[in-house]
Length: 213
Image 1 (tube, rainbow, N blue to C red):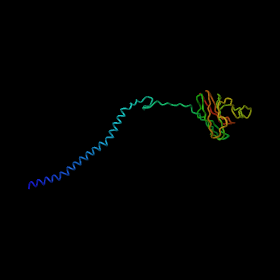
Image 2 (image 1 turned 180 degrees about the vertical axis):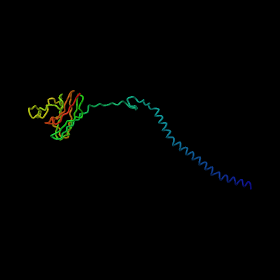
Image 3 (image 1 turned 30 degrees about the horizontal axis):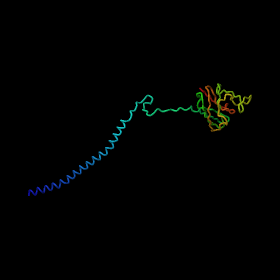
Image 4 (image 1 turned 30 degrees about the vertical axis):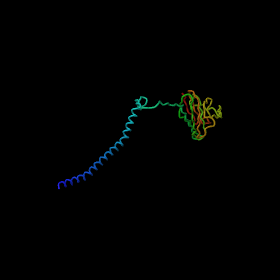
């Protein structure tokens, strides 16, 4: 009976040890698989870290910010700055109808000597022109002693200023409403007056001073 009981107990032990051993083996296998997966997922990250370190080791050191760069590192070759000629002087011609008032409005009242470009736009309701006169007479005190086209001295009916000192102008034909014309004049240092010298327009306010330095 004893031997039979021992044999029965041994059989039962073998029966129960089989599944436990199998479960243990399965668990060990799953652990090995998880370890492989963890290594494979970590490998690309490690490679990226190593590559970044290598690039950083090969890159040239950044220079310290200089006094002329605003405290910011600036890379690359020095920049070349292109300097263009002076911008044109914009001049607007306006009126409130044939009985005035009228005006010549330059956007700059002075300019350096040399080539000066004027860009003249007629924003009035009738034709106008612009003439550049060199004179030391104040811009609003030019004598109105001429008439006709071209202007010439008259003893009566004068409605234009003398154009003997005309150094540049918009030219013919006159500027119609809305038109723009550009011209360039070489002007020496001195005093100038910008006028519209169509009949009566100077008297109605179409005059402005210009200083050339």
